[in-house]
Length: 239
Image 1 (spheres, one colour):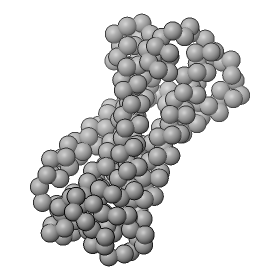
Image 2: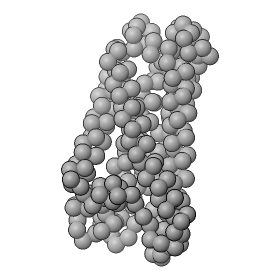
Image 3: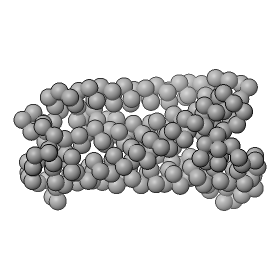
Image 4: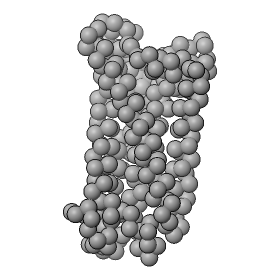
């Protein structure tokens, strides 16, 4: 079951990024309603994935508060998935955990990219601004996890910002720093995602309009809708 769970997580990630790839190509052509629905599907999968990912970090911080000098802890389901990913290399016990968090971060990043893509023709919408901010922030976080995973896979220890590039000696201090570093990074990223989703809902009429009417599909400077049910073509000026 542990291996199956790991495989399903990877499949989930592949489906999301395959959809992102399809959207990147499709958005260069006349817009269609299915593109809007596909982008919303990617975003929804990102929301579900990040809920699970974020609660893992919350649980880790909660355990640290009660046991600050104990080794880093993971939830039973997190440990099971890490064990599944760990089948890649039994000689590197930490590799499964690194792969798990790498995959989780790419789920989250795909959801944010979905926001950026669905607002492609609403250039001045607040949802787009927050979505792009999230892509940048989570992109950096994703590179951090990629570095941690690769250095464990091909070296002896994790090297990244959350380990001060491997300078921290193993122990409570290193565990504390890393636990809180990733928790705060996820708090920031999740907050940005939440704000982007809020504005995506508020501005849905303007954002969805080009997908329903190909004549309105030319990228335009669209001011954010104050009324979520305002006419879709309000306040449009050429880019």
